[in-house]
Image (cartoon, rainbow, N blue to C red; front, side):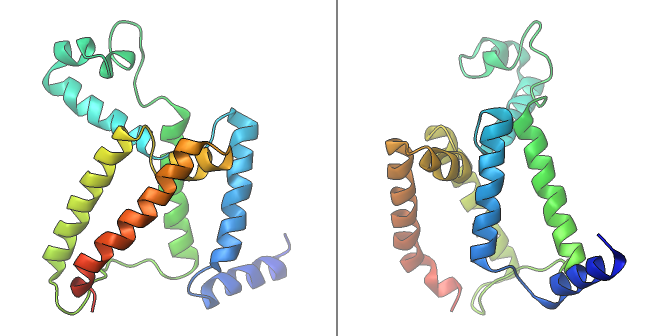
Amino acid sequence: MSDGKQGAALAWLRSSEHWSPYVGGVVLGIVLVGAFYISGQGLGASGPFGRLTGIAYHAVAPEHTEQATYWSRYFGEGKGFPLVNWLSFLAVGVILGGLASGLLAGRFRSEVLKGPRISASARLGLALAGGVLVGFAARMAHGCTSGQGLSGAAVMSLGSWIFLMSMFAGGYALAWFVRKEWI
């Protein structure tokens, strides 16, 4: 790309606060098709975090971890390091891509988005509790919103479509109870 065109592209990134959700959706769809084509699998983000939990669990109780049905597939003789998996590299790429996007668009900063009636520490506590709950639910559902919702729905899995509808219904139902935190 010539310097003039590259400068125009960077100027466009910096001039718009966010991408159009339609453009983002198309790009995400292209990435999903590419993931299926290259790896034979869809996208998913909860796997690496589950593996990180297993590493912490293994550091505390290695014998128990290696004998546990769920964790034994990652730990034990000849299993290798559990984070050597394409999903782990995907997670690192998402983090680095988000960082690059924020830096290129001039939006990289530290802030806590919250409503006027909640403190920053309470907002962070709610975010942590929600993250733990979503992580637990992702393990129970055998996939997160990207694994079940994007990849599973893309291949027309009935269970994934039920997951998606349940996720949106649960989100809308819970929003009624926590709306006071934002207004």
